[in-house]
Length: 268
Ligand code: ADP
Image: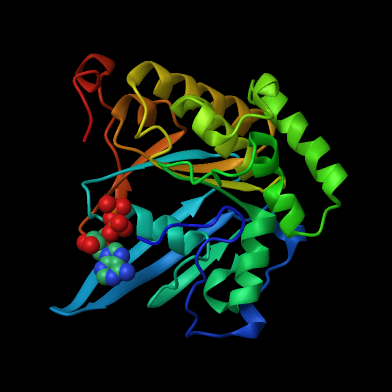
C-alpha cells in the first residue's frame, strides 16, 4: 500500500466520470446515509492476472455511526477505506461518501474532498519527523490556505483536546507511540471533517495504550459529531462500536456478537 502524505495522501487514478453525479446536495445529508456503497467491485491487475477484491459489496452508514470492519489480512479492508476516502478508484459500483460520488472526482477534487471531509488515521502515524507536533497538526490547515499563525493556534487547541498541550514543541521522535497516534488524530481532525477513517489505529500499540487511544477516538467521535469507520483486528474494540461488520469473500456481513470473555482471548 502506498505511504500517505499527511495532507493529501496518494492521488487516486480516475477512469470514471459522471459530472452530474459528482456532488449530491448537502441539504439532503440529514435524511440520507453519509456513506452509500452499492455493487462495489475492485480489480487489481497483477503479473499473475486479475485480482478481484470485492464482489458487489454494499455498505450503508448513517451519520453518527461508529462502524468497525474486521476481516482476515488481505480481505480488502484497507482497499475499502482507500476507496471511501478517494485514495483509490472503484472498478465498478457506486460510492457516495459525505455527499460526494467519489468515483467521479478528478485528482485535484479528490485532494480537496479529503482535506475537507475526511480525517485519516493509519496504523503508523506518518508524522513528519522534522516538524514539531504542533506543526504536524497544522499541516492540513496550511494545505487549505489557513494563515500560519491561525493554523498553529488551532493546532494548539487540538493538541490540548488530545491531552498533549505540553508536547507541542516536541518532534515525533521525542514522543511515545501512543502520543504519536494522538498527534495523528489531532492532525486528522483539525479541519473538522465529517468522516473519520481509521485503518488499524491501535494496531501498533500495546493493549493498554490501544484501549486509551480507542477511548480518545470514541470521545472525539461523540463530541465532534463524527461518523467513523475503524478497521481493526481487535474484537474487543470492535464490540464497542455501534456496529461491527466482517469483510469476507469480497462482501460485508454483520459480525455476530462475541462474548467479552471469548473476545479477550485475542484478535482476528
Ligand atoms: P487488508 O487491508 O484486508 O489486509 P488490502 O486491502 O490491503 O487487505 O489488500 C487486499 C488484497 O489486494 C490483497 O491481496 C493485496 O495483496 C491486494 N492489493 C492491494 N493493493 C494492491 C495493488 N495496488 N495491486 C495489486 N494488488 C493489491
